[in-house]
Length: 296
Image (cartoon, rainbow, N blue to C red):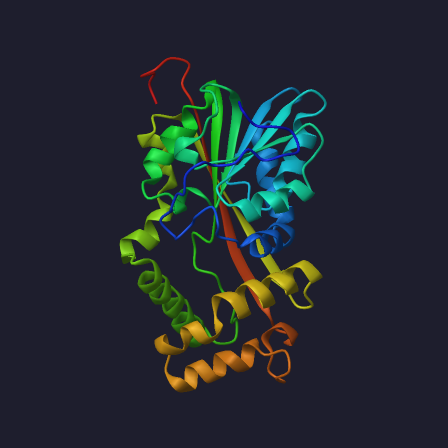
């Protein structure tokens, strides 16, 4: 498997993903914030996958590594968990929370050194859309499954996020501005942005069977718990929005958005008593057939 416990094996070649990912890119802080914010729903999704003691599990795109502990607990005492990620900084963050007996590997998921048919479950969250060809990514991950093993692809926000229960017009404009920004930054089409919703088709094209789909609603309202407050303030209000959206909004709309995002402003969104946040997390899973070409 070539993955040492407690120490990530390094990738030997630079790889660039669809969204600009390289081994040098670092958004581990954002990943950690999301995992703490969505932990109840992510754990609920994991609970649907029938994990059991002794299983071998791969977290493909493990990021900052919080899910590794959840997976390790589910397959203890004699199971094994491996975390795979492309980014050096992400693996350094994962190393800080790596459960005893688990392993890390630095690699492009399309070109890892993992042995075929090694895992009972491959868990991959918010990762497959970073690959230029998601179908190729699903096939590569499927090849790592033992016959009957499950590939579980998780994706947040298949439905548009809702932040402004009190202003649907501004909500719509901001969501459209974010999409326009990402189209320009990564040279994507509108089809590219919406294709992430097609996970069922991705798994069917990878010839997986027994496909299941379940969507979990992440719902928060004022007053917000600390992980939700931190995620929205740092990862959304400051990192996703801010100055980058100025070219995509009318001046008055941009000013209104900045006031909503400013903790010093009396209209700061996260301090509003009517603040209501909705986000989805969708888990699509399929099994590798016992025989090649088995009926789906």
